[in-house]
Image 1 (spheres, rainbow, N blue to C red):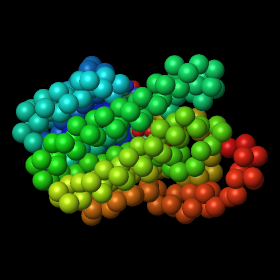
Image 2 (cartoon, rainbow, N blue to C red; image 1 turned 180 degrees about the vertical axis):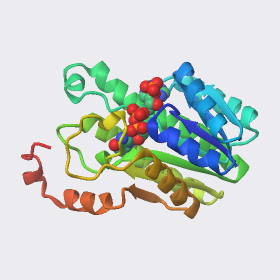
Image 3 (cartoon, protein in one colour; image 1 turned 90 degrees about the vertical axis):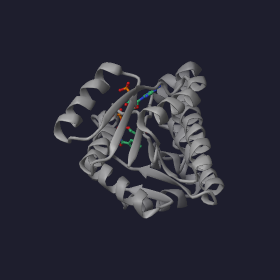
Image 4 (cartoon, helix red, strand yellow; image 1 turned 90 degrees about the horizontal axis):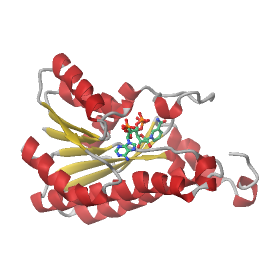
Length: 244
Ligand SMILES: NC(=O)c1ccc[n+]([C@@H]2O[C@H](COP(=O)([O-])OP(=O)(O)OC[C@H]3O[C@@H](n4cnc5c(N)ncnc54)[C@H](OP(=O)(O)O)[C@@H]3O)[C@@H](O)[C@H]2O)c1
């Protein structure tokens, strides 16, 4: 199988790449930091004797995305499964003060993710097969005052993926929405919580398995589905007063 991983320097993406490399799949690691992705690729190549390619990818360079997919197909031979992993949490306070900071969060997590997913969808629809795994977040399930730019972008991407899943269902292409809870990566560094934090490795295993099973919306860790069910049930008149 030929696998494209977008945002390959992410800790979760690295674990996904290792998971697929273990199976002998070819992987194309795409990221904006060429030196870092080269190091990651060499490491995977040494550990698993499989084909590991690298590519330059910038989520906010929307006009480059169709060309990027064309080049990725040429390099890999085909794209059977693509993981849209990149993301940027940003700083809520900075986004409130300066819209250009908010815009980066929206551009990376929503517009960039949609733009590259559309390029993938066009290719897979014509081919009549393929899997797109879009990484969203439980933060997208309800707008919170402490994180609503990131939450809005992730929630918007989840809605987009839901629509895309419907569009592609008839052409044999599967779209999975992954709604992640707390995962141990630089994004959650310093987070103080009593809620268990999952490892990137267990996340990668779970994502690969769920995608193979054809799951539509997949919460990981699993208990976040219930947590978000309860959070969504809190009446707005109470929710707006909570410092969350
Ligand atoms: N960790 C969690 O608890 C958690 C929870 C829910 C959802 N998620 C989602 O999981 C995904 C992976 O995040 P992570 O936790 O693994 O965090 P991470 O290690 O910080 O990874 C974020 C990745 O996004 C890339 N990126 C950011 N802006 C980009 C841009 N403009 N163009 C291309 N790539 C860009 C980063 O590249 P650089 O290395 O170049 O900065 C990095 O590879 C993200 O979509 C995140 O929103 C994470």
